Image (cartoon, rainbow, N blue to C red; front, side, top):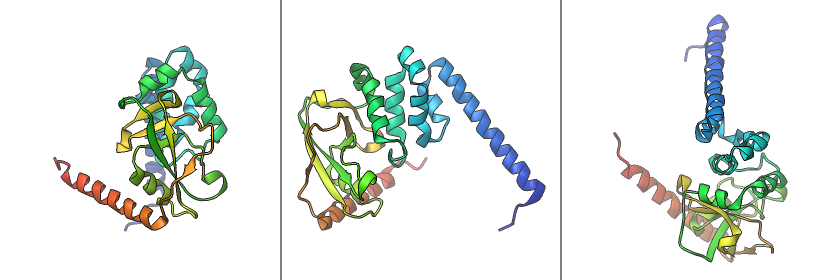
Length: 216
């Protein structure tokens, strides 16, 4: 592979920086126009929650906060460990509950529902009181195992309508974003071997779904 150095490298870096500035300027115009999807989509998705937090007063005043919060929380590609858990809870506490629920894209039948959460690691990384819970045990197993951290486990709880901030089907995850549990979530009795089996089943399903997609 040809090595790029000197003036050529500087020109490439200049063009990339200029392109990024153009994207961010487009995002600022979208924010002014009230298009929160385009605004947040103009930045790295790991920055979404920070952007919403920094502009929370403006978004609240314009009635856009709840839609922006749902988009920013859902779009994070990994997890929300880069944002203190207390800040995430504060952000949801600021929201109007009816607007927040309406901003979700999934409206299942009336509850209660049993939901699952995959956790692993120790300390802050484990987040047993996180807000995102899945309707799928297999998906919870995938989350528990995806980073290959110590002590993977599945938590489960039953939630009612008034405990759910909103539902989401983005990324085919079918999750409920819930108020923190008033009592410690229970640990599911599933073992690690069964977790790996369910994770493999899910990966096979995803592979089949990807293969079935139109290629044009």
